[in-house]
Amino acid sequence: MLEYIYQTTGLLLLAFSLQSFLDKENPKRIGSGLFWLIYGMTFLFGAIIPHWVTGLMVLALTALAAGGFMGVGNYRTTTEEERKQTATVLKNKLFIPAAIVPVGTVAISQLTSLGALVGLGISSIASIAVALMITKSKPMHSLNEGRRLIDSIGWAAILSQFLAALGYLFNQAGVGDTVAQIVKMMIPENMLLVNVIAYCVGMTIFTVVMGNAFAAFAVITTGIGIPLLVLENGGNAAIIGVLGMLSGYCGTLMTPMAANFNVVPAALLELKNKHHVILMQVLPGLSILAFNIFVMYSFAF
Image (cartoon, rainbow, N blue to C red; front, top):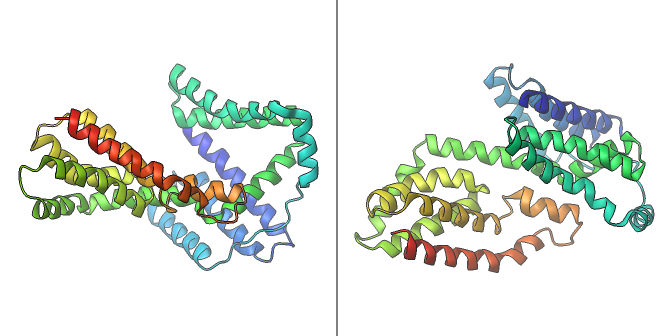
């Protein structure tokens, strides 16, 4: 079932690609079209094409993004005045499609064996159908708006997948073991508080660098959390793991590498400062980090 969701996503990206190629008002329509075409092919045929081919496709995506070959065009969408008029008429009904996605995802994942990703896909399709009924729009409108939004996000739309792969490579390369050796050299024995600080702050810093707390968790927990806190000091693995991941999320709040959380909202809201979201989250992130250190030191040992 999950493969069908991937294939549906791939078909949507191919539609965006075709629209981009045909958009003569986009001066970079070839680059944009190629980017979404290649990305869509990875969803459609990723299960059957050789891994080395997928690797070449990723390199092609990187070249298109880094070379500045992507741009925005004409999306045949409604004007700002038309959107305001529609919002005035529909009012809170506009929140119904948005609520369907999380509610449907949780319900399907908990009540069936399909899983969260399949639930997300099904809920997203249902949300589009409900949105079209509420707004009385044509399906083509949703396609145009989808392309407008994904072009606004640009290459950052696929950053989370790149970072997840990077975390896996770091772990396979033994970065966690190297981190553990460095920490042991720098921190004297029997200094539990310093070890806790090193783990929590390390999770935050690695997440800032990598943009993905899950990737950082594999590296820092392997290097510091398990050997120094759980095995050496007898800490509660559940508490350490949960607070360690939460410390990673503190880094997520403070980095542009977490593009889907910090850069994408700024682009969608058309903020003048693309880092405004991050600036507003630095103080809460540091406050939560300090709280995590206190709770872990006080209750995990």
